[in-house]
Length: 206
Length: 206
Image 1: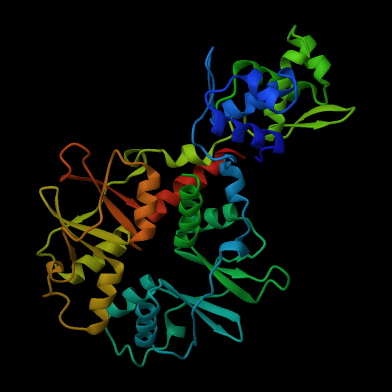
Image 2 (image 1 turned 30 degrees about the vertical axis):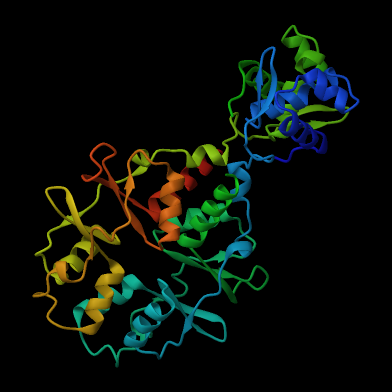
């Protein structure tokens, strides 16, 4: 929901002159009070302005554009995805664990020429390391979750689709595929990235 | 942002009679069209109704009460926290890993009489299991992150505070402490719980 230019002007006037009557706001804009009636209704209903009878309008400190939750989830996956860290399928489980700690991430993508072969997660690695065996000789190909059993998402999908898949399939991150060819992996979207996006947007509102 | 009773009535009328002119909506309510001007403005600006010139108003299918993102983050931590799984500090690393898989979770709380001593995460366990040693003899007390180095949150805090701490400290879950005594652990809030809450609320809007 975007405020109109006139509504933004009204907010500015109130910020600088609060409390100010509707009559006086109208005068400053060279408009009649009835013309502004719906603007006042919107600005008070969204909580941007506060109206006190016989006193006037106050600015509540809330930002101009109240962010609708719906709109936030409409963000495209491409806008917040991050570059994945790749590993080869011949690499050892030990190397995979080292890479997780080196990059401080939770998931590695197993790929060849940007074609996704599988995913190996902290959970897969923990399951393997606790049962023992020679971790230097065991290739990640043996323990990874393989295509086509992976849940993926397209870069043109919405954040809501990604969030839904992350929760529904109980996974920590999801490979983002090229929206055109559908098979080249172009990014990674983790629970953390989605949450960070929400928190950052919410903080901006403060 | 709550719609008024009159705005809800307008939405109902449009749902049943779309497309319908503002004039005809006003007639059904025994009110004049100018009286309804701000209601129409709010209902179209929030995307609940769509207005086409010379045709009339349509219902877009969006729910009556557009959820403001701000409001969602005001939810209390107590409302969405989940019961933590506890482990004793004498328990072995091997038992801790087993419990993680048994309950399919990412973090165990180490506690005695609901007093939190530490936290042991999938990451802590992976670091330990990959380096070897007798996992059956090593107690979790040796590898856990200890109080007071833990980031915690109060059950009366807002979801935004929790989200901010999860992102800022790069942790997967956060212990929720009793809002009154501040030392009894009463729940767990994970990235997953926060994200699930958002996705569920967004899905309700559809």
